[in-house]
Amino acid sequence: MRRIVSTYLVLVLSVLCFQQVYAGSEMVAVSDSSFLAELYTQGVEAFKSAEYDIAVRKWKKAAKEGNADAQCNLGSCYFTGTGVNVDYKKATNWYGKAARQGHAVAQCNLGNCYLNGKGVDQDFGEAVNWYLLSAEQGYLPALTNLGVCYKLGEGIDVNPERALECFQRAARGGYADAQNELAECYYYGSGVAQDLETAVYWYKKAAKQGHVIANRSLAVCYENGEGTAMDKSVAAMLYRKSAEKGDTLSQYYLAEMLYYGTGVEKDSVEAFKWFAKAAELGHVESQCIVAGCYFLGDGVEQDYREAFKWFSRAAEKGDASAISQLAGCYYGGYGVNASPEKAVVLYKKAAELGNADAQFFLAESYFYGEGVEQSLKKACDWYNKAAEQQHSDAMNKLGMFHYRAIGVEKDYIKAYELFSSAAEQGHASAQFNLATCYYNGHGVEQNYLSAARWFIRAAEQGCTESQYNLGVMYYKGMGVTQDYPEAVMWYSKAAENGHPVAQYDLGVCYYNGKGVERNRDEAVKWWKLSASQDYENAKKALRDIE
Image (tube, rainbow, N blue to C red; front, side, top):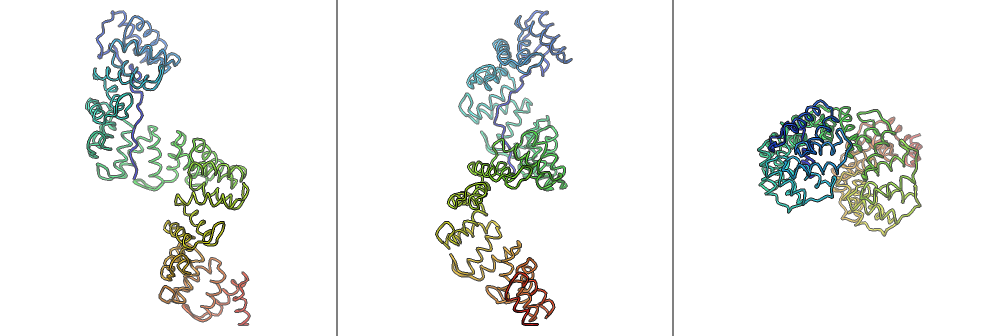
């Protein structure tokens, strides 16, 4: 089930106080002369007309004469590089001048600078002090940031209840970021009893104001049926709304829904488009998926070079899965010149990061001596590491080692345990091997019924040896009720897959009319196919009927 991603980072809120168009701030008394007020107003009008250099000149004159609104706006210009080059020190200097005059927005912005270490040394405690001063004047962004500090314990002791109070005050004032934070408190039960319905209520409030993250979280609630009736089509619609506004996670979630046809019509092409958008924005999981789509030609034309490129981009961010996949590209020569040596280097890097697939393939490299000097000991070590993570291929391989005494002492019980674990995960070869243990009584008490059950599970996945063995068991009534037609059915499956003994036994069934109408020509056909694979019994059968 998808979970809401909590917004734990304090954002720089309301950095630009002129975004609220202060033409004579309502938050501080304007005591400047009419001349300074006029300069400030001229700066506002210039800014609205995108004449930023003029706005800066006007505000700089007013700011030097002590106009707090102009000082705050000038600080924001330096912070964002609007009309001037970015200069965080000058930004904090001007914020400080306005803040010390009691300008609430400047106090909040100065707090943000201290919080993020922009233009000043990072100081969470000082940030909190300025947020408190701004919040006391009822400035909602400062109240929200103060709540986040209480939530995270930055510059002040963790206090979920105080955080909740801050979010509630700002949310009731209509501030969307606070509404989103308050929704999270109710969603996770932070500072208040968990209440998913109330969480949905506040997510809706924030989303209605265009809050992208709240809209995504609301989508999650609809997708999971949390605090509201489950409605995956509504979830998809909400994800699309946030995705179109550039929210990376929404793009990823929408792509998943399109890929699997959840709440929307299945569309791998459009799914790829959204995965690609998220990938371009740096979403690592999407980069891996885009690479996989190019590799398989799923939703996009197959292109190994593009697959290699996207695996590389994800790998550069340290993603272990991407590093392992990139190793596979080097090993197989997909989109790049084959290099087993480079593959081993990458497999080792991913393996050391704990990636089970990489651990298995690194073990394979050591086992077969591909790209690295052969070492059965190192192979076993890495198979073990992968097996410890329940990697089914590794468990099956180790099971074979213990069963056949390859690099380790023969241990049927250990082999049985490993085969069992892998078989339960649906690993066809392990299911066959487990059935063989039951059939022969190796590592477990002999049990033909259990053998038959596991042969069936492997056979249904196309395991030819299991299909043949089931034919034998049904023919002889071992662990199952004797059933010649059922035996013929399983012999046929194995024979069609090229199993020479199954081909011979199927020919015997046709020759003797066991489980199938007697048919000498069919018998000869299957015996010839078996004999072509040098199966002596088939050759003899053909000689005997000449």
